[in-house]
Image (cartoon, rainbow, N blue to C red; front, side, top):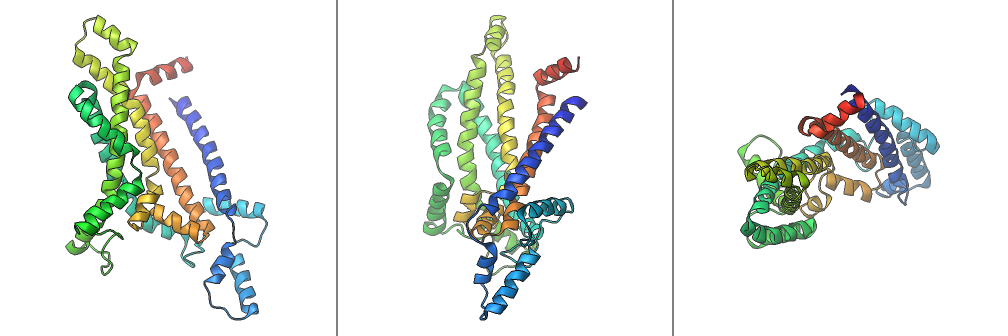
Length: 331
């Protein structure tokens, strides 16, 4: 066990270094100059004042040194817990901006992912053993999983928000409210949350259902299932083993989905102007905010790697084949 997780930890550490390096490089490949973009939003009249302000911003953001030194400074600051200062929202630091957006993304994506995964797997398992449910659910599942997030979000906003007038279509809460624990604010928060949640839940539901249905059918037709049936094992026992084996790739998919929670859902958050991390990434790209963009990408990398490491642990507990392989390598 120690050797297995030690090897995994080494791989994840190496992956982290490479991924963070790529994420650091991506904003610097973007066209344009973030300092000039920042200066364009000011109303300086003289060339001397503009030059002095440009020098000041280059010094504050550390852009007045060679690129290789910027890279080394980035790692030094990262180990000190400093993600830099936002160019777009200067003088706010990147960490505080991201921490303000993450709760909205988690509150939106965590229920949508977990609930769609649970309901979708249940429907998929039932469809694999019910011809009537399979004939009715499978086409619906394909329609849902092929539906673009943005199109479904626009449809829900138009039908339930504009035409029916039941739900608001923009923001995380009423524009005249301040965040607190009052019933008025919480009800407004839930009303603004429902349509983004529903759009993500419905699209993900179809994919989970189809995946589970196909995996169970595959497992029921495998050699071990036929062997158990030939031995006279009850059909219920065979289905239980098939379900447990079919759950393994679904767990992997769930881990990847959970790892991207901090990334938010860019398209859905854009449609509803929902202030999560996905919407923040778009704003960082539009405003050429290097530090905010690389800070958001850093949270995504950490989330995905942690989720996959947790799945490796779960696989050891639920899959005896992994334990057998570990014992063979140890021997």
